[in-house]
Length: 248
Length: 308
Image (cartoon, one colour):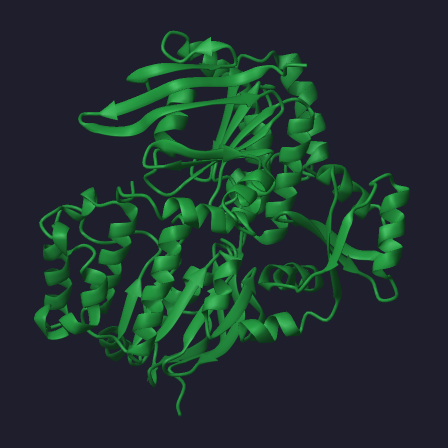
């Protein structure tokens, strides 16, 4: 059975002047898949993600996200996705409850939906006691877990996670991945970047960008076989060393 | 030989009575001259507060510290001449060129680029072709090399690097650690903090920190040798279900994903055979089990769970 494709790109390209940041990348991501999007600094990951989120219009090529076109239907795309990064996640000066309400409101969810789901979420995250505390008073690990829950609160088709676990302790990092697995099981497609190579192993498939192109894309197991490496770290180093353009 | 850095029971608290954050809860350690010493811990562990106290930019609430034989409070000016500090956030002048930044820092310390060129030449060589470019226009990797050059230009005896590799990709991280090895061979004492556990193995000794306290100080090998529990790496067809089933097995202290495998920490008395039998009973077919050597991350996880 052919699984539903949530992202398709065909020779997707972005040029800034004479610099080709993303150079004709083609790939597909299936519904419920955990897709690792790796690359050295400056390889073009951020530019590619910005196009897929409807924030930057491509120069050339084709792409759809949740069935919508990245040139013409950027507003529909924004409604269908969730986004979280290490740098941008929650408003520190709002309480836990206010943050949930704010984001869900932006995505146009009804008061009834927000109310019911908020209580369930607080219970799940064991945050009932903290519900009315400012987010800035929470430990980093809790913030990250809450930020992820908020990013998928409106039940998007796909969630983009840009280095979601940077700086987090090893226990919380694993709890975070447990939440990712659960979201994927519930049918949410996960598109994730990370600098932790052990996390690349947790993905169903991994792509590695070098100098604007996708140089490798497969399951972690096949990539290790293909590059005769024992870890994803080695695979990454072998590929990224070939890069000729300097970072960023 | 006298220690290059001494910290004794350092305590630092932020905030008012209502909301108090204890950044450092009595931190003590010593670093030998010429040592490459790693402070390993997640965000919020207290790494930056510690570095700011040692570089005389912040006063501790209590406790004392010495750097290169000088007290961080009484002799702060002597320390400032002797240490190099690379903060976690890029702190050079974005609208000065590469060369202007370097000249500026040299001038502040009453020296010249030429005088200390031999110390920085291997690092500076990477960015010298761009010496007329404004620092703000450099890539992340190049900014990092310029910041390191500026921190070294006055030939410090002790170098403090606060999370120099955070957000940096695996290739640049590797290069950076090679540069630190080179600096160490020149006799400079280096304190470096990082949230990446895998970088611990590149240090002579490390302190594992969490919530403002040191959980363990040792050589990387010493830390892993003290693990003291039986660790098994497990792999099966369905890794997500495997993890759930591991959590349900009473013969384990802990279980968690670890790259390609899951790690299972056996309780005393639990055998690998018993674990295998349980997993087969749960319908995992022929799972792969092998005895695993703990690494720093396993130790960090175990320490976190015993200290909390």
